[in-house]
Image 1 (cartoon, rainbow, N blue to C red):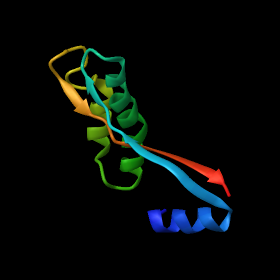
Image 2: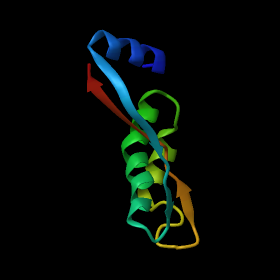
Image 3: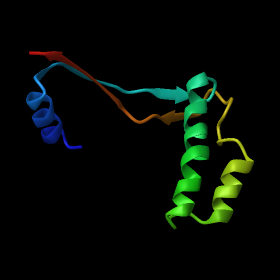
Length: 90
């Protein structure tokens, strides 16, 4: 849903955006957050195979080995941003 559609839907339902912020995280190899991309790929990669966007062999290889850099503090991954929205009933 686009931000304009979200605003329109919110307004129609009597809501007003009161707060909007973005949380950005960088996970280092020694952080527990570093497990997030590994878990995400294990969940999402089979869907890419089903859509014909990833070869089955590549998916199997990805699931056979841990994400490169896991447990190495000098390695890091930029996690996707998370948007926090708080709306109040008007």
